[in-house]
Length: 124
Image (cartoon, rainbow, N blue to C red; front, side):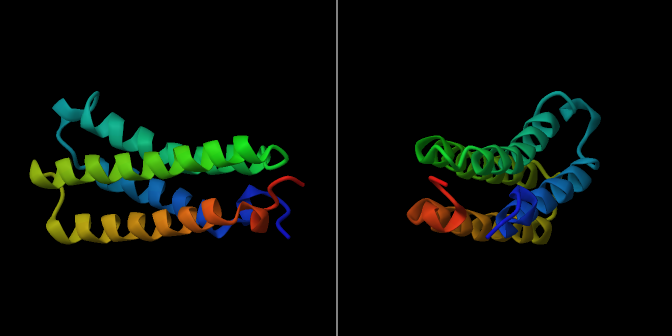
């Protein structure tokens, strides 16, 4: 079993992706600082935060599922912001494809948890 949310592979991936999004967003134009840059950073960080919160609420399966569902939604939101960044010319196509692909994989991982939350300690 897991001793904490940091042991979850899905959390580690989400956290790593948030760090990568932060790095690529450093190159966004200054006039996007309080708009696109802020949005993509917040949504990417929120994925990991919701996964951690959900894991801590695993004794209450509905609350856990709600947080993990929120994490999935935030991952999708991040993909939208990354697509905007690509279409605005702030990210290269290959950068964007790599990040979007990794977020797709993260979504599949979250989906597996949502299908069988008992594997992750829900209700214990």
